[in-house]
Length: 229
Image (tube, rainbow, N blue to C red):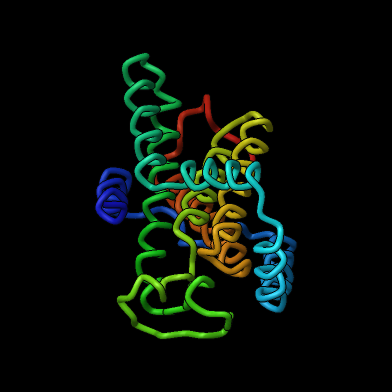
C-alpha cells in the first residue's frame, strides 16, 4: 500500500527532466554523529534495557503504551493523512493539501524501506529470545521481524515531515513527543529492542527529510508552507 502510494506521488511530482541531484537528508554532521552514538549505546544496552523495562511495569505505563501503539498503527496514520488531505481540499487549503501529500510520500518511502529490511535483517523480537544478537536473515517468520520497528519508523517519518513543512515549532515538538511515545511503547511491550526503535527513528527522519527535499527540487511547494531549512 505504502509503496504504491509513493510511486503514484513520484509520477505526479516528477517531470521528464529532474532538477537537482538526489541528496540524503539531514545533511547535518551533528545529526548523524548523535544518531550513531545513540544507536551504539542502545545496542550495547539492549538486554539491560529490556530487563529493566520488564521489571517496571504498571497499569499507568501499560495504558500509555497502549495509546502509543494505537498512535503508531499504520492504518490509523494513513486514515489521519487521508482525512487531513480531504479536509484541506474541501476547505480549499492548497498549502495544507500539498504538504499532506509530501508527508504521505515520506511515510510511503519509509514504509517501503521497512518492508525490505524486516525480512532481510531477520532480527528476533525480544519476546522470542533473551539474546539481542540473534538473527535469522530472510525469514518470513514474524518473530524474526524485530528490525526495524514499523510503528517507530512511521511515527518519526510523520513527525519529521510535519516539522519540515510547518512554520510552528509546536508542531515539531508535538510530533516528536508523540513519536517518542510510540517508540517507547514498542520496547515496553517487549516487541522491539531499544536499538531497533533508535535506528527506526533515524530511518524515519532521514527518509522523510530526503523524500520531501527530493520532491521540493521537482515541484517547489506553496509559499504558505515554505520553510527555511
